[in-house]
Length: 309
Image 1 (cartoon, helix red, strand yellow):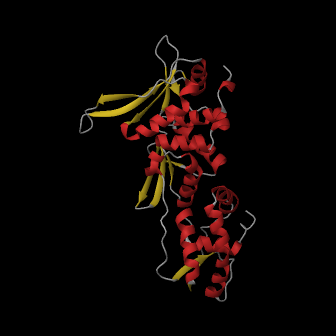
Image 2: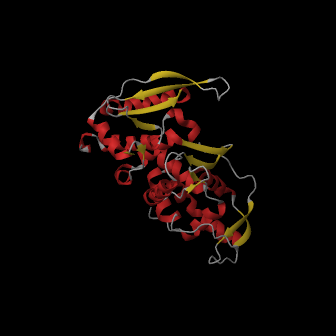
């Protein structure tokens, strides 16, 4: 079966769905059907996915189900289920994503169709954002249904395609701990997040620095004789850096070309300085939207190799 009957965008969404909550069911002696189930909490997301996919994959409308489950306090769960009719396209997808009826990761398929849209659908299906107040702590992608070998290879795909450095935890899930990476991940999926998924995104709040005196740690190859003066001089680049951060396309390019190649964690020497008040607003804005520390931002200002982005 040729996949040319489905648009690339539909296959991006299908990729995210099958990495997430989607599956292809097959009763004995019958042809396969595409299916996904979402809790009633995610009713809006479920209906949104149905509307996006229904024409191409021939889905019937979502229907409510109440399932007895003695493991939980109220004794049952509530969900919406969506299922397709049989179709040669579903049979083609089943051949790609299943081996002897066991769901597998079809890596050649991912090479073609795992993009930012697919990543966003996967995250909304099977992702979780852990935060403390409004500060992100980790992102979890539930991949426990795949083998650990598949997941390790999947981590490699995510690193190569998106510069995301996930780790595998003891529950065989993909985890992203680094704040810079988390903020970058959220910018990647930002345009494709449904309004009902606010719990999985961060809304940076405007805040200012109450104290101007601070300690800045810079790489040892940056030599300063008058730290306060020389650092404040470099902070004139903050306007340009803020403009980059505000523009999603430019920021994604900035992350790949500037942040990834530079090791911003080699903080070797501390300088206690006073930051001029006029720079505090931009400094805090950049921190709140990127996860960069003051020291990392100031290091970038010294290197100022982002001016052409």
